[in-house]
Image (tube, rainbow, N blue to C red; front, side):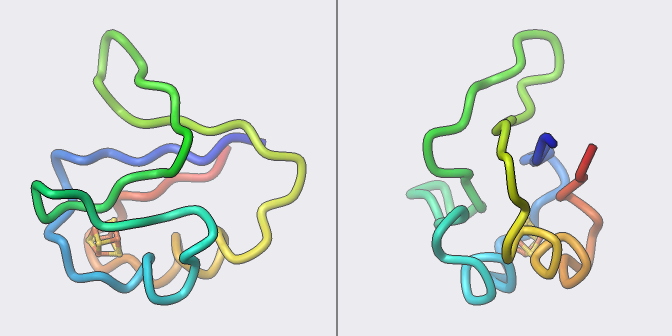
Amino acid sequence: MKIILDKSKCIGCGSCTALCPKIFELGEDGKAHIKEARIEEKTENEELEVEKLDCAKEAAEACPVQAIQIK
Ligand code: SF4
């Protein structure tokens, strides 16, 4: 599975980092950031392949602007 973060949508509310600090952290730009993410060249989204979603699912559901996608 893949966790995808669209930083352009993120408003820096901190919900994902509170619910899932293992995967998400707030960057110096005040926006969420996926730890150890790969940057997708075309979209500049952050992507991370994971075997288990763990708390990322809750984080995606809690994001008020749907910036976190799970595929
Ligand atoms: Fe950004 Fe969504 Fe995380 Fe809030 S929950 S910091 S809007 S990605």
